[in-house]
Length: 76
Length: 475
Image (cartoon, rainbow over all chains, first blue to last red; front, side, top):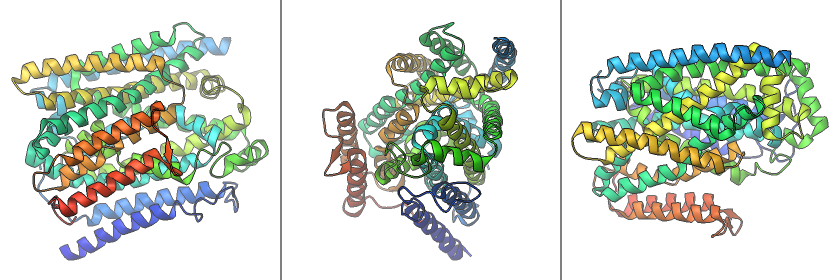
């Protein structure tokens, strides 16, 4: 179970690093281009919003699989 | 004129309510303080909701409501990447780093990061370097809160008080209730400020979108006025990949290097509370930054040529109904106070962690330190520029340079050599030199700040490999 948690946690870390790197590429930030627009919102903005949501989701997943979960802590 | 009178009437009503809440919270907190740890660290027992609100309110300040709309207005949609995406990565950092920090803090009896570093490196100089670093870069950050709100109040109240008068008044209120109620008082006021900030920013954004006949029409008008705002690097070329990359590194490292944030991680009740807090802060970040896009885009169309204070007073006050304008003003003052008091309190906490001796004497010195830090921030606020977002970034970058030094201390099991401390001190001096123009701001096309981050990262990596700095675990 712990091994699985560790694997999933490492996958979360890898996911965050990958998304962070991708967010600096023309896939998210094409220079001087604002199309295709989504509901009138320019490309880099709606892609940026998607990236941000994905990062929050990965953090949420991270809280579920963090190998340190359940360890004793302050005033538990 | 009538609108202004209505607004002032509401400002007075809200100000009385706000001050009443502050006094009540400070007194309630004071009655619960039984020890110095209660006063300085909230008793190390902060639950998820209070932790989330205080973290969010400390992170999202006047800079969010004043700096971000202005950033979107002048530099376009890349500002989302600058802050929101960086914050998305930062909350994951809270999760990863928080676990290690809390473990180390428990082991070493945490009083502040300076004290922890002194302990880990086995030298007071480690604590001193960190303390001087945060003093140099947090004082400007506190100052921009104070300056932002002062110039805004000055413009809104038709120069009834000079900016330094507003700044002094705000700092006085802040010191008074921080010294009365301690960290818990600050945290309770953060809850109030966080809710107010979120409410106000959405109401204003909604008004802006309504005035522009919807989101689609808003961006269409922005396209006609200034097409460059719809993509990177923006019309003035600010949002280059290098700029955004350094910004992300600096923001992601905030939980590692800024004591008002790292101390909030340590004082959470348990790991689970901290985890939930991180996710909640991430959601809060997206929700509070999103409306500033609309405010900024509205400003780009309606107030493209206005100065920063004029744009902000127009969009936040004079284009709003009196009651909303008044709530905004109180919300901004609350935001400025809640971020500044957290930072000044954290700097005082750092001072305390470096001091030894009888607790009562130490606490007295700490409280004097709080006043000294506030005065330093006041002086800097009078001489700093109006570029709030850029000054905030500068502060994040400056403190970020200490991250490898902190990370090495937190992640290592063994006592580590002082090399990283001296390298970090040198990096800070080089960074300051480049800011003052004494050293180049870029070398061979690489920004100096990025170059420093890369160099520090590589040196700390080499130290981990060759200097015996062994990682504590694989998490």
